[in-house]
Image (cartoon, rainbow, N blue to C red; front, side, top):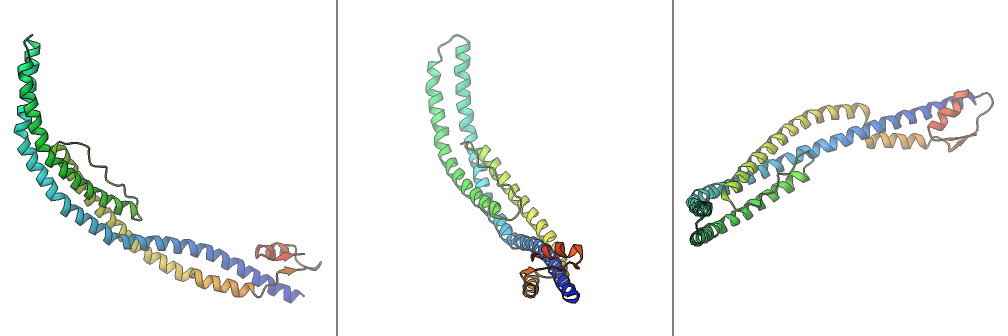
Length: 237
């Protein structure tokens, strides 16, 4: 009986040890899987960064051209508004200036129809980049929405900022991939030492088949025997 109990306790202890090893191995494997996702995402992020630069740069140049082109129109509009305000301040009739104000405003608004088209292009670029960043297994904030602004100078700032954020995300991804590669080597070495989850699970199942579901201990059994067997999942009487 003593020999059988000793064998049973040794097997139960080994099952418990392997279960602890399995929990540790599963945690390591989960971390390794995440790091592999990081490595896999890096090329997609680099491609998204490149696509953002390719798509946003000509938009930024076009917005700069429109900014320069619309500058004189905006100046004429502002001058007409200033003259009307000066007339009012002097107690004169500002009505004659209103026609100039309306004409200048219409010219600016007509010119900014093209600017709205650039905003739509920039928004599409921003949304594509945001989708990639949000789906990446990294803590990357999506770029802010493109401003609801008809001024080309404001949208040009958004285009340049989008390009900067894309480049920053690419650098972050590159750094994360390098760190993940180094850590993954360490994890794999540790997994080889601890045991892979599948192998440990198979060992546990094989040992569990040797254990009875229920054990009745005699009066000469050590006091700790029941506790050790129960930790292995056996029913003890």
